Amino acid sequence: MGRPTKLTDTVQAAICEALREGNYLSTSAALAGVSGGVVNEWIARGKGTHARGDPGGRYARFAEAVEHARAIGEARLVAIVQRGATGYDEETEETVVSDGPDGHSTTSRTKTVRRFNSADARWLLERGHTQRWGPSTKVEHTGHVEETRRIIVEIGGAGGGVLDSLSGPLAIGGVPPPSSAEDQDEPPVKF
Image (cartoon, rainbow, N blue to C red; front, side, top):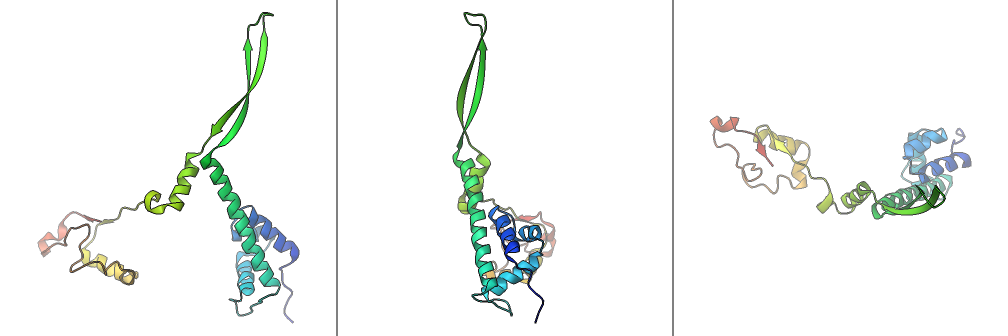
């Protein structure tokens, strides 16, 4: 018989509570006193992707609980971002001191102000509409064209269509490669 599991109801509850608060899995594991690697193994066992799978058993229930807690945590954080993006009311109390008929009077009133967080709105746009609002990347080529071709192939770009779209010599940004050895010291080609 193997050693007893560290996956107890208390450990599961602590992990799931931290996940519901929006923490990463490794942080949630640490808060519960176990390593992230152990928690990942428990999840794999519960999903049946580990050699010692446990479909329908304790680890399967744990994997389901973790998935549910993560969903709650994500929804909670999205709601906070949505609130900032769409605005929220903030009430402030204002005290006004003025000279009245009795020489001195004080009035209090409540003022409601609508607050927005443009960073939250921008974040939602970047994630939800990446083609229009996502960050763009500018790449500058500072080496020789053939070396770039070799690197693209080496890192797997050839299978991803990067080189497939090129006809003939590597032409980047509509600029053809140098035609002779004396043209090799041209300024960087941008794409």
